[in-house]
Structure formats: C-alpha cells, structure tokens
Length: 92
Image 1 (cartoon, rainbow, N blue to C red):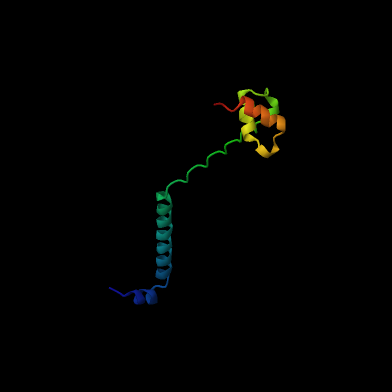
Image 2 (image 1 turned 135 degrees about the horizontal axis):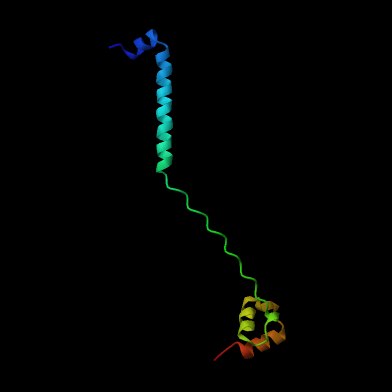
C-alpha cells in the first residue's frame, strides 16, 4: 500500500480530492451543529405604558382622584390638594 507522500507524487489530483472531501465533511459537520442548537426565544412584545393619571379629570375626593394624587409628586400639590387629600383619602 502506497504511503500518503507516494500518492501525492504519483497522482497530484489526489490532494485536490482529499481537500474537497475534508471541506464537505466540515460543511456537513457545521450544518449538523447548527441544527442541534436550540431556537432563539421570541422577543416579548413591549408592554404599553398606562397613561399617567391626571387628578384633574376626576371628581375631587373620589377614589380615582386619590389614586391619581398618589402618583403625583407631593411637592407639586397645592394647599387645597393637600387638605382635600387628607380629608378624603386618609382613613383611620
């Protein structure tokens, strides 16, 4: 049986066949590897933000108005807002 070097000397096309064969094996191996990878998880759709509560759209002293006032920074409340909130929204 001829050695690898003797084959290259007697038939130079043999090296081209070997190179093509090894390349095909690499391509098949890569395809098998890609097929074995798990599919990426689908992206979750963005959750729409709820519109900010506007206290002026509710009746002063109602439960919705109290909830809206809790969302507003306390430093921006007027004196009337503070008084009405304490009267209608704070429970014993």
